[in-house]
Structure formats: C-alpha cells, structure tokens
Image 1: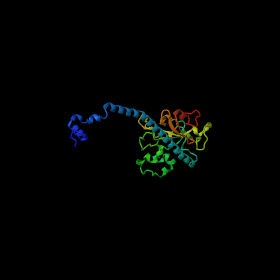
Image 2 (image 1 turned 120 degrees about the vertical axis):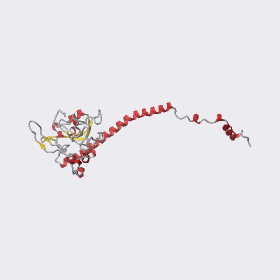
Image 3 (image 1 turned 45 degrees about the vertical axis):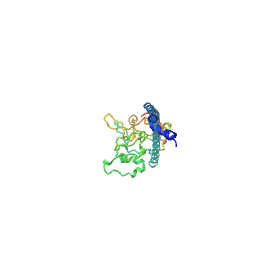
Image 4 (image 1 turned 30 degrees about the vertical axis):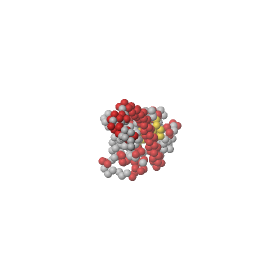
Length: 271
C-alpha cells in the first residue's frame, strides 16, 4: 500500500496540510467590478434612451388609428340617423328666428344646455336609448349617456364626468339656417365635393377661460368657434387632428386645411 505522500489521496492530504496550497475562492470568482457595473448601467440607459421615443411614437400612432376608427364608426351611426331623419346629418333643436339687430337666427343646440340624457349622442347611438333617464338632476352623469367611441384614446381624461366625457364635436356650419342646410344627400355649394367638407372634429380638453370656467364641454363646433374649441394638434404638430368628412371618410390634417373645409357656405374658408 502506498504511503500518505504518494498517489492522489496523498496529494489531497498534502494540500490540506499546506495552507498555501488552498484554493482562494475569492480570486477564482471575483464577480463584477464597479467599473464593469457602471458600463452595464450606461449601456442599459443608452438603450432606453434610444427605444423610448420610438415606443412613444408607436403608441401615439396606434392612438391616431384608433381615433380614426372611432370617427368612422360614428360616421356609420350618423348615416343611419340621417336615413331616419329626412337627411339631417346630426341632431339639432328648433330654429330660433333672428332678433334684429341683436342676434342672428340659429338652430338650438343639444349640448350642455340640455340634461345629459337629452344631448345629441342619445339620439344618434340607438343602443343608448336603453339607458334609463335619471330620476333626479343629481344623477345626471354624462358618462352614462355617452358611448366609449366618443372618446379619443389620445385625449386627456375628462375633467368632469358630470358634464363632459367626449372628444368629438359636430360641425354646426352645415346647419346654419333653413336656407343654409346641408343634408346627407345635399350637393355642396360652389361645386365642392362632400370629401371637402368637415362633419366632425376633435375638441380641446382641459382649457379654461379667464374666469376659470371650462371650455371643453361643447358638443358643437359653432360659428366662429374654431380657435376656441377645436383641438388643432392632437396627433402631433406635423399631423394635426382627425376629422370626419361629409362623405364619411376620415382625414388627419393641419388646422389651416381644416378651416378651409369648415364652412361650405364660405368660398374662401375660415372659422
């Protein structure tokens, strides 16, 4: 039999007896140094800086497409409404004759001047008719009477669900008076096409007047209201906002182009 100094067993015993021969685990597995960790963190930060803007743009573009889809669906409902209401493109109230020289005549709007369950979406979206009317004014919550497709995903959350939970407004220029009224089958004046006249646009959210009153509760794009109520750049400074046109196509245009398509009775264009 071999002695303790020979063979593999003897080698192991010699190592155990000689501390200098012990394996230093700390030297054999040093891990990351501080410099290496800083380099890794820097690389991760650089990747985030590169990818985050691209992800943000992708999400904004997806919201733009979803908004366009909302407007197309609303266009289908408005088409159905017009077929059942003698060609009217959207609901309005009674004609209010002019009071000379103080005021011009106008059709009564059906927006925040009415309870939420009497506003124009309740008459366009037929499935909303099943929503019961509130028993008391305290229950007049606009959110219950507004379908989800009336909210653009790129829009900010509503400031007050008791008053306004919608992103889109109809263009009342198409119903200025009994002799300036565009129905679904009406020809646009001055030889223009239905694809050149805006039916609906996007409204501002979170804006206030000098007294602190909200300006974002409107349901109509009224005469002279473009600068006050229309959201001009919801989908970017280079793209503008989405609009539904009279022929029911949806376009994303800048405000200057939108204003030219606002008033079919104005051959020059303007708010």
